[in-house]
Length: 108
Length: 284
Image 1 (cartoon, each protein chain N blue to C red):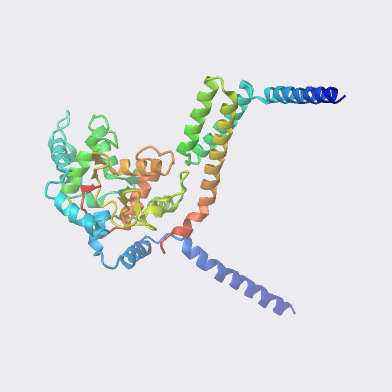
Image 2 (cartoon, rainbow over the protein chains, first blue to last red):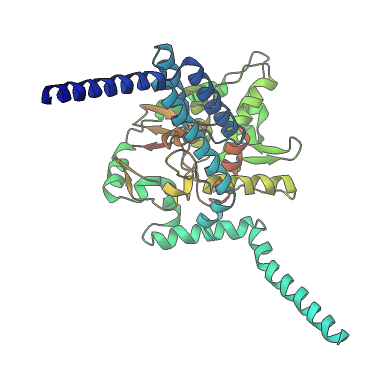
């Protein structure tokens, strides 16, 4: 009886691990995910360029995303693309808020 | 009752106008007041430094560095550039004309007048841009704004102007005042991932160290241009200095001599009016 219940527990554990494993495989990013994330990041960086305030780190992170995708590592490529988009959006926020904030630093 | 309402309305309008007036006045560009406030800020911050010594950048802030610099000046590291610039300046273009034909006083002792606002072109003309316009007008290709040739030409022209006080003029043209104001805005605007403005280093922190370097004060900072930088092992133009500053704070630099950089040079030079040209300079 005890042996049977132990077998059932091990089986349940193995099933759970298998399910978890397959779930993580399902969650892996595809090339299409990368393309969508990269396009969003590139668009944000282009907007930063239009207001003359791109950051070098955005460009470097975009390049890292492209390299990871070329190596077939789409999880890293998507993560880097999202980071690049966040950097680009931060640079846009900076340029927008500095339109008035620069006056705080002015020598009068 | 009607007169009471009218009186109250008039009072409201008066109060609104009074409230708006100071804000409007503060936003109206006033270059002479800016220049006076700029000089006062630095002379108050560094009461031991003579006004004309601010052109010596970090050397005016640190006694040890000052002594090193005086020794360095015995055999100036920028001398090769002045010699090269002199030779280039006197060599005629293929059409027989030369740089001297493009500048007042044949280009000798005129550094203190640049940048200037050209009302015909409707924009700020820096010395670097004027040199390239001269070349192109005479059928020669323009030089890179960040390479040795441009540094040499400006080094020679600065050398012939040493001791002459900066004399930047803002003509009675709204475009000139707008360029000045845009230059001021650029100077104080934070940019790059490090969130630094030009003023972060050169107004808030002159005399302080950033890594191994002593930061120069903004007052007189362009009087010494171009400069030989030991860090670069070579000469650097104003364009090189601006673009490098931008990338150091993790901002993508603009193209040399873009409107923003020329306007910035106009503003920074104007607020240093009266201080002597000391270029070419040498920096750690």
